[in-house]
Image (cartoon, rainbow, N blue to C red; front, side, top):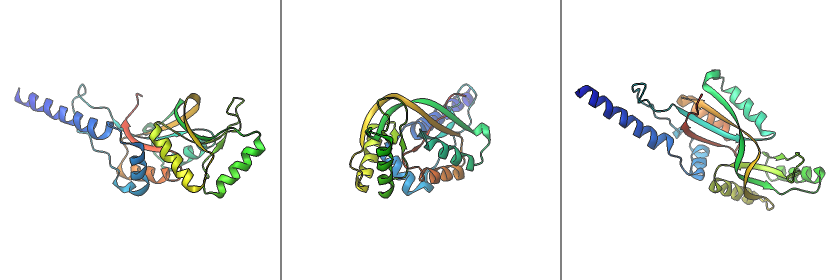
Length: 212
């Protein structure tokens, strides 16, 4: 009976550790700072093994979200990790969040001219919207889950000299790709943080793995 009681206590402590340190999100701005400046400090706690009925959800590193031309680059970056297929999950979802973009221009030629100006300012991650919608010829710069993350990214663009970008909430206006890396090793976390730095409009965070 005492052994069972101790087992229950340990299981509860394991769940508390997972809930407090893996599940609870940090602010997007702080997370971006941590990944860009000190990726080597990112760690995933090893969740103690508990009986099947009491086990906490597996931990994943979530990386995203990607849309448009950037998806191919993200796919290539994930492939470079050379992880087992069962460890990586690629999820396609409707994009609902905060969009940082340059409003639609009059023509494709003007959009390309604006894109060239962005490159001259050091902004290389963008895509021109080509869909036959009200957003045609807008320039997408990044999609974020929170207003705080979008505003932080917008400020970084403004510091580079981008004056015509805006950040607004959008619901289901395009498809996004998000990657989940299941139970990554510390080496994999470090590599993921490093490749994230090549796609600064994306976010990396520790979350509970999605259902299989």
